Each structure stands twice: as structure tokens, then as C-alpha cells.
Length: 119
Image (cartoon, rainbow, N blue to C red; front, side):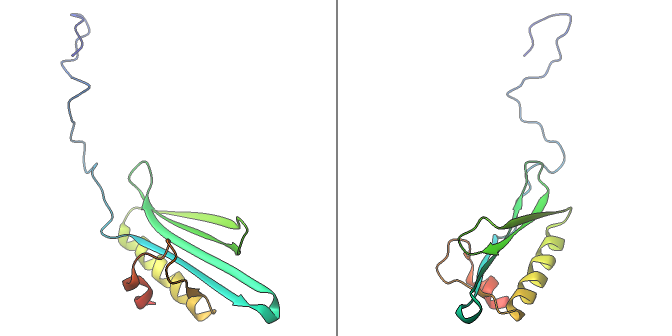
């Protein structure tokens, strides 16, 4: 509590304030790491995606891609609803699978076999 008489706000910094829906969580983790290799074309590419929350509680789909062993490129999409991020995640994953990318079994970024089964 602020102990100054003239400016006492009657609020404690230790008090938990309920401001809207501040305890947002994802319904399940979404992570995917896939690779596409073709030694005849000297091709070794990766594509990684995950859905997470940023510091403001907004749902973000982060995509990373490039040549295996390089830092590659990165793009982040922000969404108001988790469902919109999941739809884009699954659409992109299906497109990448059609282009020859395959999930890498045992990779830490591919955590849920149910997600890879949906592709």
C-alpha cells in the first residue's frame, strides 16, 4: 500500500488484478519440423512451424525455413483467435507435404504424432 496520505491509491502492488482474460493458454502445442532432401539436386531443406503466445497473449504462428545447417528465414503471423492460427498451420503443413517435405521422427520440434497424422 502507498502510505502517503495525499496520494494513497488504496491499491497494493501484490494484489492480483483480474483484467479481462489475462490467463490465456493454447489448447495444445503445435510444433512441426520437416525436411526435404534430394542428393541428386544437392537439396537439403528444412521447414519448421510452431504456434505460441507472445508477451501480450496474442497467438503467433512462427515459420522458419532454409537450407539444413543455416539459420534460414523467419516469418511471424499474429492472430486474434487460436483457431485461425491452427487453420493456417495445417494448410501450410499440407502444402509442404505435397511438395515433398516429411516430418523428422524424434526431432524435438515435432512433439505431437497426432499433428503429423493430420497431414
